[in-house]
Image (cartoon, rainbow, N blue to C red):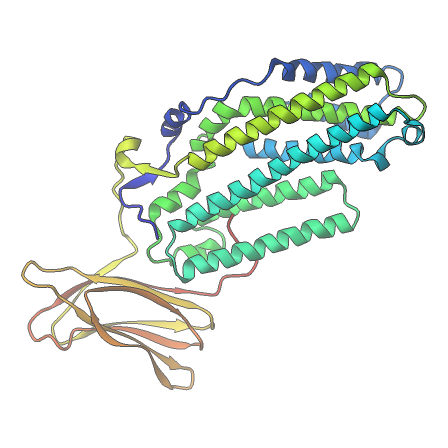
Length: 434
């Protein structure tokens, strides 16, 4: 586990100074020009003599709407629009009239090239999202205790991701649309964020898991609880890098709208040269600028710290260890903690140390034993003397577990023991973090 001593979560003011080192070169002016031009051609020229269907009206409204003020949501919206565009660029999805009459090899080549550009852009975006998700999760996990607790969270995450993918596969197999697919993907993304917030605040199912964890840095809990707050650190990211991404989102919506309306009106007419020119230019500008943005933001995210020193943050946080108890174990006596465990696969964890005197280093005997429901006693951890110790084990049987700190061998010296003991029930299968 990487130490977080002396660290605090990144702050918005720190990110502002950090982002000053990563200015994003403005988007090409062609982005706004072509977005306006292709939207006007779609809503003015193509709808002039042919009123929109209900579905087309919905597309017009989406293209007119301002993009959401969230970086990750805009990433998903761009991905959805790219996939919709690719669907229409498949030769089998061309209008029937074009499928039977397209003889212009140059046009066929153009549509094929646009398809490859959008495929490349989609692949870049999917890779960015996957790598970023894995990077964040792995970085968080480096600050978690590297024992059964980290294993539980990783297993839960893997299981949750498999369940999420299975839900997507089932939706597609049942005939769900691309819109349905991305509605579910975004719902799953919001569930990941809720679970991350629950982990940070130890609420929901994580109230069972996290409130009992020994040694999980509080600074980590603060980070994952605060990172996505509306006015938290990520708001600086949204303010700094959101506007160019939002412009690209509007452009993707306009290209998709134009292509959809165009395809719907080509049953009785052929593609016009000016329509092809605008489509080609808009697609080229969008794919090149979007890939440039993804490459840039990927570098920014990879280099961005999660934690900084208190001095860098301009603050020093004094934290309390309220979950620990401190008792005096007199010479010749022992201190015991008894736990009743009802379920197998529960975890019992402990962390303790002795408050050392000035004259000599002290230790204390420690052991763990279990008495099952039939009254049979088993030694779980043999007696050994420690100055401090942290450990855990998974229970194999329900019963009564006893942790014993033994100072009976001492004739004169009491021991001041600072300890925490936790019993963590099995965590339900349906929860993970991302």
